[in-house]
Image (cartoon, rainbow, N blue to C red; front, side):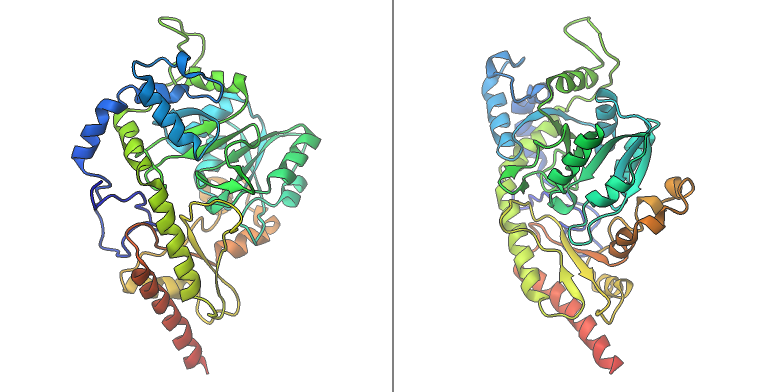
Length: 404
């Protein structure tokens, strides 16, 4: 493995410098070496299902298939489909395969693709509030948003923290609604002792390049529903069921060999990346401890997590604003940023349709205005974390001293 191997190249995984504009995650030679052993995986990964015996896999190299499925099932127990599609397109396919109609409830504090995937299918995203402690969909708010037009709920495992799964499932059962989960952040994470990937009717992972485990682009849908799995298999390959037999309206969602090769290479480092992320998380906890008005959103130590996101929350006790902290960090070439601000409901496509919905989302507004994400990943060691922490501490304490 080359020394420049990096999985995260988002603001949460880069060397903390604004000048960093190019990035090579793995050497070309490594990709080329893995293309041969990935040549069949680019086809067979889209066929994976919990109930598929190895003997039925349409591949010329069952050993390759077995190694891939073994690696993925370590982090996601029931893989159905991998594809070279974007996460949003994946969700659109899912919604065609497991029909959602009319209105679907989602949190506003999430990536805009969650809302767009619904909107592109002619479905109205109905925005509900979040739990300010976890940043995930608040079941009580979701329940209040249910109308006769509601057909489903999509919870989001934000930052790798599991949504309120049991509560949302109870609401869905009571009102006969579909329940799905956006698990883009949650590959390798668990809810108590059970891995994310088995809840609701299905869950959607992202393997986009910004994720700690990535295949350049792509994702996975996990489900125990055989009919849904079969529909998705058909849709990702133009609806083909055997040679020259099209029985479904589909598209080209097959994973490319290069994307599969990237995934194979990244499997070799996935545990190391989680270890680095966990180390950085605890270093930030120590570096920012006791700082007035500055808290890090905690991970549950009793659950597995990928620790990809270092989420700082500012409260009213903090003497400086979020914009001031970000400005100071950027001035030192440290890449920190707001995230999911100002909320999906405040983005133009949805603000125009729902101009007053913000009054129902007070927690979303509060969190969206106070969150800062800090850099982490394999290019960050504890010395780098300490530098970032000291700059934040200096900015806060000096401002507090001047105020006196």
